[in-house]
Length: 450
Image 1 (cartoon, helix red, strand yellow):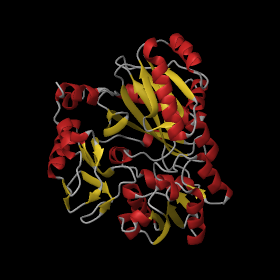
Image 2: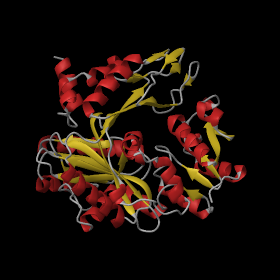
Image 3: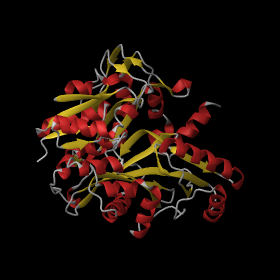
Image 4: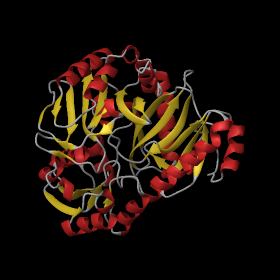
């Protein structure tokens, strides 16, 4: 039985995990950098361990320090949250070697799915639909250009070990391919220390639809429905909702079964997300699998009634899923807005500083996941997301109205935020009608610029 969990993360996800552990009667250990000494997750945990300076590379990304903190504190499990070491197969393997329960999939599964080319090939073998593209990693621009001609333009160039929109470029014509390839490859090497790239046909204005799955160690796999994550900027998600206004019951069943089959083919265990692209003709294609909890997991929790973090812990503790696919029902509609400390009017420049005053909305059907409080410091060293505002209602129309109202109540002073920008999206005619795709933000900003 897991008795004590060390949370190898910070911010709202660390707070979220601590609260789940409290409800399960599990003790918690928070690790923190010097910049986070007064952070909320540090104040809420049962025990705390400082693991280094503000720089993530010397604290939250330092595997040895986190393993040492786990051993010293007597924790028997680590929850990595999202970001940082959550999808690092070497870290998961280190946990396995030290007999520490890693709350996530086995290290070899993370390695297989973290390599986008290998993940793609796994899906091909499992007969999950994939976008036409390369079957092996490419390193040379001439070889890649010849492959792009076979695939057909436009093509998207991606880092094999990429994520978060880094190491990614779209080439619309052969003339611009070489520059796009070199730029993406340089970015990939700088961000991930690897030059391996792969190519795919670039779908024009598809939707980004992802399926949450849960898989236990006994071969049981279920999906918890879809999330529509099409509202994104520079490949960074901004608003997510469940269910998708574009997915029918019949399509949900087909995509969900494909997602479950993808998890089975990979030998997956724990919570994960299968990401698809959906075109105008309702054809869907595997894009990638995230081997961790997602930022947007609350919308799925609200429409299914399932606590995904608790399920992660139960699965890691060797327990079977207590339900089958026929037990999963989607109820109502949920929407999440990511609140970032940034200035949209200045190119979304991060806005670190001290929160001098704040008010966050509440009431029926409103949830706020955050680690901020009046007087807290937003350091410049980490991701700019400071809160997630999530609403639930019986229908999409009601949920949109509730989110409009909730965003209108948010007060965060001392730092700039994207609240007004999100408010504008929630009133945009295309968003209101559900007529959105991954180019929605780009189109909106281009029209606003004249």
